[in-house]
Amino acid sequence: MKEGTKSGRWANNPLQNGYAKHGDKMPHDEYVKWQRECLTEAMRLINEDGAIFYNHKWRVQGGLLQDRADIMEGFPVRQIIIWRRAGGFNFNPGYFVPTYEVIYLITKPKFKLVKGANGHGDVWEFNQEMKNPHPAAFPVALIERIISSTDAQVVLDPFMGSGTTAVAAKKLGRHFIGIELAPEYIEIAEQRLNGVEPQHKVRQSKMF
Ligand SMILES: C[S@@+](CC[C@H](N)C(=O)[O-])C[C@H]1O[C@@H](n2cnc3c(N)ncnc32)[C@H](O)[C@@H]1O
Image (cartoon, rainbow, N blue to C red; front, side, top):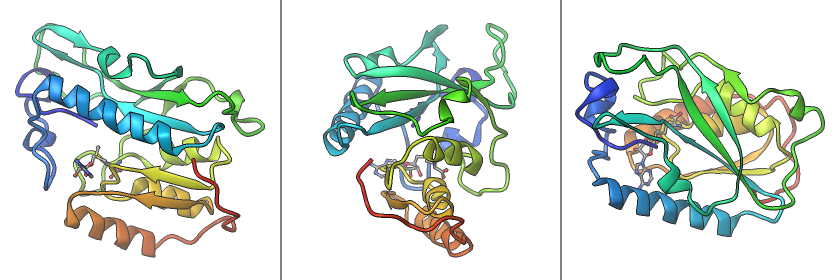
């Protein structure tokens, strides 16, 4: 997720205008409260062996790093995964160009990775998605890495955008539930999903 900003790294980014139906201009305290409510609901939904992979950019605002500790406080964060991606333009001479995003692995106590997945390091390198009209689409390979590292049979993405999570889940033969505010992004998601052939058979459902 992201918040609106008019300064720093993102000043000239297309995301400056927000998403199609969501301006992202929420005051910081309100935003933190909202995100914590979303995470609390997600924790309520998952099983005792479930997990949340929560992606959030860190950013500099007013000259200080916002590392999202205020959102994360009190949630059972087991690990931080760094998604290393290409940098962009940095118009601010006060800090280096950001080249990574953070994925918080928030888990219930019995969560385990599938056999072999713990061999991946905690720094993942995936190029950004360039062809997707959504302004903040994930690369499919990143989400495939996440889903295939778990045995989750139902994957929920409450901020689905152009449907990348659904595309990856369908490819891997998992069930998915997506929630998205903007009808135009849902349309993109549906079009993308129509072009996906599952590589694995869908198995029995289990909430993740
Ligand atoms: C970071 S983008 C997700 C992009 C997605 N991962 C993809 O690959 O396309 C966040 C999305 O959340 C949506 N959004 C914002 N507020 C929302 C809300 N209250 N309910 C559902 N979706 C919302 C925005 O429209 C935007 O598409």
